[in-house]
Image (cartoon, rainbow, N blue to C red; front, side, top):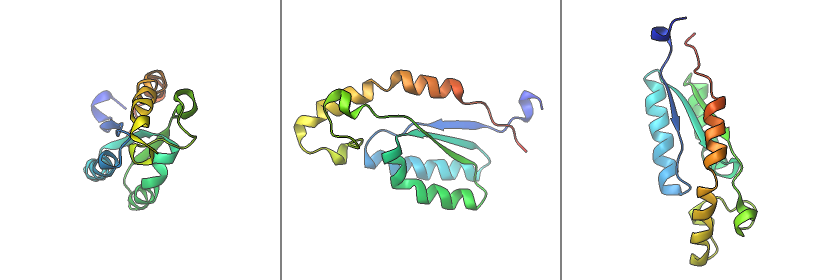
Length: 121
């Protein structure tokens, strides 16, 4: 299959805040409905929040994939599983979550390298 025949592939990386996740999943569904393959990069905890929506979209034939990376909670002093701004116990934890988000760079770059353009059937 030539490059011209490849299906468009969009990678989405929603910010670790609920107000960013919901619109990003809506965007994923809209793009997939127009024939775009979608890869959403997120943490397992955040993915669990919208997994059922993505599962329903995939069941209708939309080409959406979720890829996980590990959020470095313990490395910045956050409790395990604290991977979103609405999960923070206090405003003092905001600096910690920003630090953790900054630490994701290498993991996200590696995930991007591993993603292969998916071919249209």
